[in-house]
Image 1 (cartoon, helix red, strand yellow):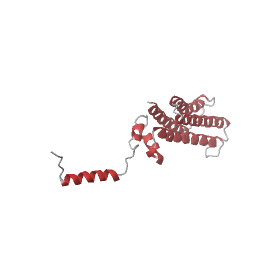
Image 2 (cartoon, helix red, strand yellow; image 1 turned 90 degrees about the vertical axis):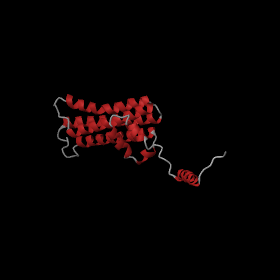
Image 3 (cartoon, rainbow, N blue to C red; image 1 turned 45 degrees about the vertical axis):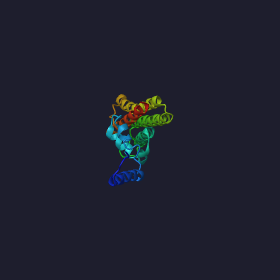
Image 4 (cartoon, rainbow, N blue to C red; image 1 turned 135 degrees about the vertical axis):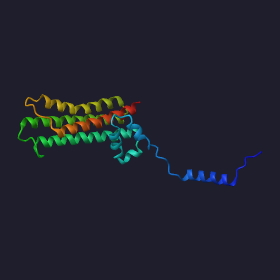
Amino acid sequence: MGLQISASSSFLLILAVAAAAVAPPAKPHAALIPKVCRATKYYGLCLSTLKSDPSSSRADPKGLASIALAAALANATSASSFLSSLALGSSSGGAAGDPALSRLLLDCADKYGLAGDALRASALDVAAEAYDYAYVHAMAAEDYPSACRDAFRRSPAGTAYPPELAGREDGLKRICDVVLGIIDFLGS
């Protein structure tokens, strides 16, 4: 007794095989970004950061970590530049006439520069798959803005912590938290 296939069944089978042969390949990493971002503290920030980079749709988890690290580094670098220009008085409301404030701002610019150095080290560690070290460096980067806030708190003049700096501190801490979550994902 042989297998009998009707003409319509044969046609549907051939159509299904042909469709599979010409269908575009599924994106292997289409579901990866949400999966990786669920491992972070700030899911929405993670999604928007990773999706803002066109290469993220083809990236593996290590590539996604690199994208997040690049975003964190850009944040730290921008904050450092902003603080330097503010300290030197090149921005409106600068600190050129207040040497104590200028010193505090330059100290903070240095702290954000050190955060950038730590993020660069973390990126090298991710590339080398040394995830424990990558995590430690990203944690250090996340903590440098706190040292800036502490410097303002300890200042003898009782200088107020600038609100725009508080926003930058929060931004760097959040993107570093995203980086830490992705590094955790890599190490698991």
